[in-house]
Each structure stands twice: as structure tokens, then as C-alpha cells.
Length: 274
Length: 268
Ligand SMILES: Nc1ncnc2c1ncn2[C@@H]1O[C@H](COP(=O)(O)OP(=O)(O)O)[C@@H](O)[C@H]1O
Ligand SMILES: [Mg+2]
Image (cartoon, rainbow over all chains, first blue to last red; front, side, top):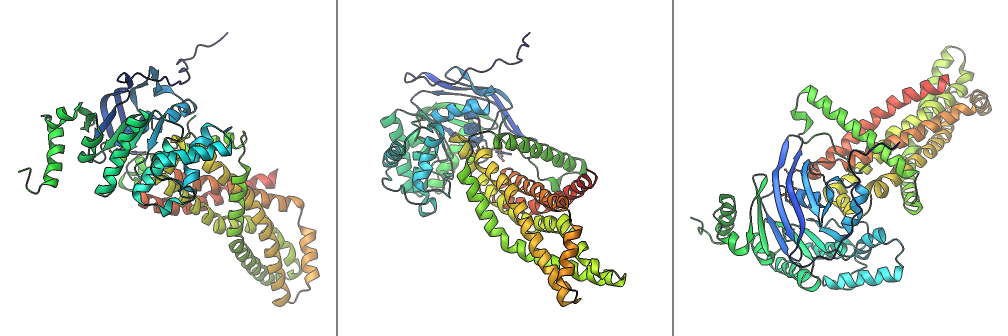
């Protein structure tokens, strides 16, 4: 006699090419705490296919945690994350592996493996997801991705030889090596000079226009947020307090959003907020 | 079963009461036990990454050998000096070879090697993996479709498991030579008496029990070092804390394990 499983096994993950604008990812009633520290009380958020959604918020509000929950690096305490109808919340670590092939993360500090060359860093996910791929094919793919991020021919360099902006680019090349359709950007412009920031913003936009990827960008850099975001969401007080287009956010009357916008304006124009 | 290794609780233990601190320690011990199970279940299942294992074994062995040899030489010198003197007082100085070889093979070689070299290996691993944890490289391994326990922990623990018994054997040999030196130069006993006594006294199981201890200590050192590295919290400062904690935890764990293994091997 078979004993009924308590929880039905989630179906294996498959990615379907979405039509632009359809709902791709849905965060529902998400809560998360680390010990006594509550990061989210009730987070709700939708991500549409083909858009760049920016999640703004101060330091420590849980922006990185949101991205990590999506690819299973952290687990929410309660609530659901639904990706194209797949409920990811109960996926096992093994079931998350195909999800991670389609949803790539560009880490804040790039998180390049410092013992590997740039080329081997970019090849890393290819070796994991496609163990049968030939060395020739591998080399070709690596070169192609490095060219895409404007760093052709840098395969032999070590991460310690690179500037912050170049590391970000290699991090992107590595993340998209498996042709991910969704890219998660963790503070892509934090700590970069204005010119490099500009070039990273252009790179984020070109991923959308050239490859049609969906991006979730978390940042506290307002300039960058407005430069890349189709829609912007504000994370504050352990929830998403507002989601809207650039215009809607700019004219927002939500106190948390206003505080964030005005603080930034005061920084740009001395005395401007008074 | 997830390789997500979690530390006990967010707030630093020093700011909490005794009960809360004990709870944190227990929880942390629980996750270490869970990680141990996960590491071994991965270690025995393919794919095996021989290249990485050989790399770690070689680099650990080469880096540790000088200290291991130096420690063992002086351990041999000093126990020979001590026992030679006191056995002389009881009129049985000729038995010094037997006593030295048993002390060395069963206890001093494995334990001293684990406490000196092992603490160094463990804290090195904690620092290395801790740095990878705080720079999100461990998260990146998972995000790129790989398993950090398989990639980082399994080869390191297995390397420790292989290296520590070998170092113990080296320590046996140089410790014995050191002991012989003292017997000859300090007490003017003939060398063949020393070695004959040593050979008569020592059984294969004495040698094996020491080597076995080395293997167990190796596993403890590797697991604790990797665990402390993967559970680092609080940035670079946390890495420093993890390395010092690793030295403390491995030393205590080695001494505890030593007692129980001795009990086991004596009455088996
Ligand atoms: N693995 C973890 N263990 C314990 N606390 C964590 C962990 N990851 C994040 N936190 C806590 O959760 C909060 C949100 O973190 P994070 O998402 O990194 O913030 P940010 O918005 O700056 O990216 C922080 O207070 C942080 O201390
Ligand atoms: Mg962050």
C-alpha cells in the first residue's frame, strides 16, 4: 500500500518563451526573518516579461534577500513565489538548478572566483549545466559572451587584474553564459564612478533591447533607477510600498518614496530639498 | 536536503544570556552534524573530482610537513629526555625505548600533529571559505548551478583525511629518531637497545591506532574549518572571528575525540 505524500512533488521546471508583457514572476505574501530580525512582513510584487523592474530601497531593507529568495539561495518563511505557473517555494535544491539556468544573478561585488581566470569564470556555469559541451564550443561561447559585455579577448586575465566596472561586466558575462532569460542585478552601479555607472546602465538597457531579457534591478542609486527602469518599486518598512512607472514614482505622494526621492535631490543640489 | 548551511542565530552570542548562548551553540552543533552527513553522502557518490582532491592533498601536505616534522622531532627529544631520567631513577632506564615508542605512536604523534598542523590547516580553510562567503562567491557557486559542499568542502575534508595519517606516520618516524638521539647523547645507552626495546614493545595495533586517530582528527579539522568558513557572518571581521574559533573548537574536539578513541582502541 502506498502512503500518500504530505506535499505533492513540484513539477520539474521548464521555461516557456513568454509573450512580452505577460506576468512572469509573482511574489505573494512573502515573509522572511533572520532570527529575531524581520526583513519582510508581507511583500507583494509582479514582474512582467520583457520589462526592467527596479526595486529601490535603503541599505539593509532586504533587496538582496528578495533576489536570493527567487533563485532559492535563501528561503522565504511563508508566502509564495510563482514563476510562469511553477510554485518555487517548495522546490528542492536540485529542482532549483534548472531555474538558475534561466534566471541569472549578477552579484553586488561581482563574486568572481578569484582563483580562476576570467575565461574560466565565464565557462563555469556552462561546465555545470552542459557537462557534455566540447572545449571548442565552450571557448566559442565564452568569447561570444565576453564580446557582448565589451571585454573581448580578456579570457586570460585574473579577476584581481580588473577594475570594478570590468568585474561587473565579467560577472554579467558569467551570469548570461547559459543564455538566461531573466537577469537579477544586485546594486549594479553601487561604488562605481559616474562614467562607469553610465556604461553599466547602457549595458542593462542593451540586454533588454538586444536579447529581450527581463531584468530585476535592485539599487539605491536613484539616477540609475530612473535610467533603466520601466517600472519602479519601493521597498520600505518591510513591504513594497509602491509600484509604478517612472512618472508615477516621480510624482508619488507616498511618504517613504518622497523621503527617498527628496534625500537624493538634496544630495545633488545643495540646499535643494529645503 | 539543501547545502544551505545556516549559522545559529543573528545576534552575536556575547550580547545574550547564558541560556541563549547555549542554545546558539547547540543549534550550531546541529547544523555541523547535518553538514557532516551531507558531506559524506556526497563524498561517496560520483562524480568524483580527483583533480581537485589531488591538488588540495598536495598543497596541504607540502605546506604542513615542515611544522609536523619539527614538532615531532622535539616531542621525541623531550619525552626521551623525561622518561630516560625518571626510568633511570627507578633503575629501569633500559626500558626507555619501549615507553617512548608507545607514547609517541599512540598519543603524541597524532595528537601533537593535529594540534599544531591541524589547527593551522583548519583555520586556513575557515579563512579561505569565509572570504568566499562574505564576497558572495559561495552564493555564486549555487547560483551558477553547482553545489558548494561538493565543490569546496568534500575535497578539503578528504584531503585532511588523507594528509593527517601520513603526517602522523612521518611524526612517528622522526619522533623516534629524536628520542634515539637523546638516549645516545644524553644517557649513553646503546642505540640497538633503544630500538630493540621499541620493536619488542610496539604492536601493529599501537601503530594503527595512532594512524587511525590521525584520520579521525583530519576529518574533524576539515569539517570544523569548512563549517566555520561557510557560516561566517558580519563581513571581514566575521572571518577573523571564524579563524580563531576554528583553532579553539578543533583543539577541544581533538582532545575529546582522543579520549574516546583511546578508550575504544584499548578495550576493543
Ligand atoms: N544570511 C543572512 N543571515 C542573517 N541575516 C541576514 C542574511 N542575509 C541578510 N540578512 C539581514 O537581512 C537584512 C536585509 O539584507 P539585504 O537584503 O542584504 O539588504 P540590502 O537591501 O542592503 O541588500 C539585513 O539586515 C541583513 O543583516
Ligand atoms: Mg544588498
